[in-house]
Length: 112
Ligand code: AMP
Picture: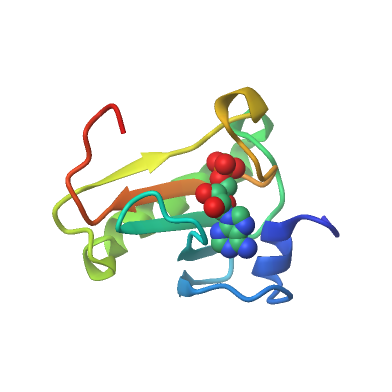
């Protein structure tokens, strides 16, 4: 998607603080962190929500979760972390490119 900010980050057209990258996903620091550690994991492929998952995208999302699980400790999240995916504007999704918020680095109450 030409004008999608996360597609631009994935293409390297907008700078980001990357913490992990492979052929199909990118993990970078959220520009407006809500917790001491706040990362975003995106598939490089553009789609908006889980409503658009076909089998290939579902497998891609599974691999993204697998990578998060494998690398979380190295990212400073050994004590635990929260994964959040806002789906649609009413849920607070402001960027229409699927992303997983990775929140941690401090104790998180459920209300937070
Ligand atoms: P959401 O509101 O769930 O769509 O989350 C979008 C997130 O993207 C927010 O937490 C923003 O702070 C973050 N964000 C927006 N633009 C950038 C950017 N250029 N670099 C890093 N994070 C960004």
